Every structure is written in structure tokens, then in C-alpha cells.
Length: 359
Image 1 (cartoon, rainbow, N blue to C red):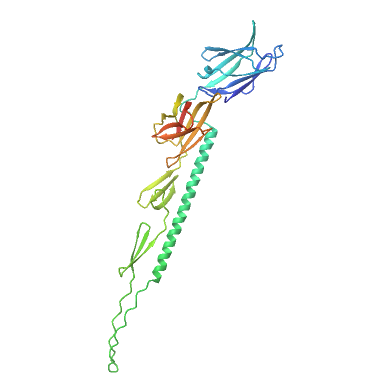
Image 2 (cartoon, one colour; image 1 turned 60 degrees about the horizontal axis):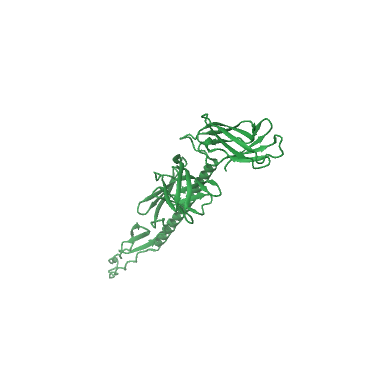
């Protein structure tokens, strides 16, 4: 019972307190509550018969009879035919007692069509989507900045180690040459042979997380560079963020991009009544793998039929966040772009009313 229209009944008129415009196909079981401020000469109206005549926009009509359940008020559901076509429906209510008939002032019920292609407007859902986009964007930016700082610190540490190692490297001093025989005064002896030059750095190479320093004496020293591992175990080579895209380049030159989209569009997948009975059912093929968010509206029989809503967000890892009212008895799965209800405790007995996606 999503909406109750309250109507005050006076001796010569009916006053609608909270007029509402309904939509075609409304499955929320709207009701009308009549409150009699004028008792038409009776101490109580309980048990009195009311004739309800709905004159529809196409001039056809539906008639039903109900009994007043309270002393001065009655609550009854609006006839389902009102929600089959758009326009104004006139409700004529007559108090019937034997041959006596008292007709109340007309009550107008308004319905309208939902135009296909019209922008989807739901403030709560829009706020939820916007909050999720902001949260995901902030999370990705913070994680990206953290990893950039860790990579920068690792590189600086390795360069400092290489520089310190280079400063400690020094070639061995060459052997002193043989001193020449002392000649006659004025004749200088021969100069000794020059010693060999010490081993120096010839090249530096990088492979994976290893930095190798090669020396000219065919020796080398290997340093290990600390790296930040990706989700698939590969090493991260570079990280960049621009144009609403976060790009991660791995050591094998493969790359991954995460895109934050703000210009999503709404697409209708199903509108009507689809009965789901059983313990497991693939009930709808989305026809696309590009969806980001799914909205499902369904009817579940409890003490009386009640409308429920489910919202599913798809993450970049193809896992799903599921939000719904009272989902303890039902699990929802997406397999090969098909929506499946799987009951954990009892057979499924629901009616799917509408499915929309945002892509």
C-alpha cells in the first residue's frame, strides 16, 4: 500500500486532502480512506453499503460494492482498471440503504503514462548513484597516489644504494717499476713500468626487479628493486591518471584502465508481469555486458502483495554489490548476462514488474 488518498465527507461536498497523480501500471495497490464528518442523520455508518462506480477516461465504467467497516470511516483499494489507461477517472460513491440512495460529491483520480525515452527521475536513486561515483573516484585516486609515492621512494632508495656502491669502488694500485741502475752523475735512470688500472664500471642494466652493475674485470653486482605487485601477481611498471581514467602498466607491457563514467543513460529491459515460480530461475537476458547498474522492481506475496526494489552495481572486477529490501531469503546472481533468482530457504514465488539498466 504505497499511497493512501484521504477524503473528508461533508453534507454537500467531498474534500481530497492529498491529491496524487498515479502512473499507468502502478502495482503499489493505492487506497482511498473516507472520513465522514457528516453522518447523514445516523449515529454510526458501520455496516452501511457503499456503491463505488468508476467512470474511466474511455467512458467505460466499473462498479463494486463495499461495507463501511468503522463508525465514521472506511479504507478501500482503488479498482485496478483505473491504472490500465491514462487520464481522469471519476469515482461516484453512493450510500445504499434499502431503497434510499445518497450520492456523494464526485472524486477525481488522475493517472498518466510513462513516456519511453524520457529521462529517468528518481531523487533517491540519483543521490545513491552520485554518492557511489564520488566514493569510487576518491578511492581510486587515493590508492593511485599511495602507490606512486611508494614507487618513487623505492626508486630513490635504489639509486642511493648504487651511488654509495660506486663511491666505494677503486682500482688496485699498479706495481712499482724497477728502479734503474744509478748511472754517472747527470744520467737519469730508466722509469719503471706503469701499473694496471683498477676495475671500473662499464654498464648498468635493469631486468624485472633486478639492477645489474657490470665492471671491466668481468665482475658484477646485482641489486633487488622493491616493487608493488598487481592483483594478478605481475609487477607494476607505471601508474597514470588522466581524462577520468586510471591506467596501470605492468612489467610485461600489458595495461589496465579503470574508467569513472558520469554520463550514464537509462535503458528499459522489461516492463509488465513475469511470474517466477521455483527454487532457481534464469528469468531475463540483459542482452548486453556493458551495463553498470541494474534496477529491478518485483512483487512478493506476504500477508498481502508487496512491491520491492533491488539495485545491483557492477565493479571493474565483474563482481556485484547488491542492495535490496529484506533479501535474506533470496540471492541474486548474474551469469552470462542473465539475471537469476536463487532461493536459499523456500521456492520462489514472485512477479517481476520492471527491469532497467544504466550503461
